[in-house]
Picture 1 (cartoon, rainbow, N blue to C red):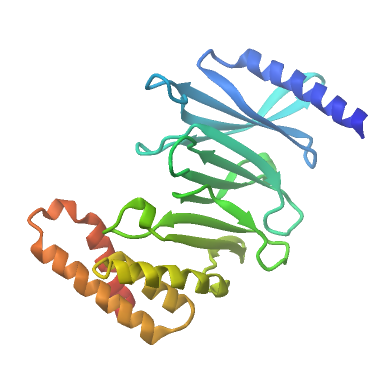
Picture 2 (picture 1 turned 90 degrees about the vertical axis):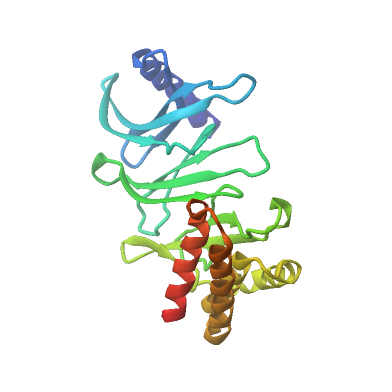
Length: 277
């Protein structure tokens, strides 16, 4: 009802003011969420900095806190700090609480996002909230667009979808998109690409078009091999992996700067392993 919503907003504001009073000047509350199942408040606080003028302040690190309200007093029950890697740039944090795994117990989703460029990279963290603690159960980066969540087969278990672009010999606008799928099974998150292989057939047309335009792009060949392998076309996958291997070997042999070939070496290691499999 409207009255319940109004009272919840008033209560949220009181909790916000109480927590803010105890925070040092360089930290502030980013999100505030009430977990009705445990009668606890989940709070994100952040340390911010402004490294350059005219851009969004950077979130240096994010801290999750669980507070219990007891007789008008706030009791901090648990704390978990998420630190960013040196090459990450984060401008926003989104907070969600709902049942991802179909067991009736909500998970906490912390979505760290960078807004303000032609790509919108993000990192999705999923935490179990059992026993009044944050237990990390999943963490993946999505490069092109923020991570997405779907219940693909309508079984009550939500899948996670991350995105990134593929292609080494083309501009970003020409790069076809790739996605990875993850689902919860046997008490952990696993790759779900093969469980939902029908999703990958739609990628093949774009990859074949790009491959005709950029026939010497080894990464396109590798991911065409991945598509064929996911969709159970093993002989076709092997053909693409061997083509990718040859293109990478040619690059390595002709290059004078071995230190600049980390991506190619990683790609070579992957396709050679798939050829042997």
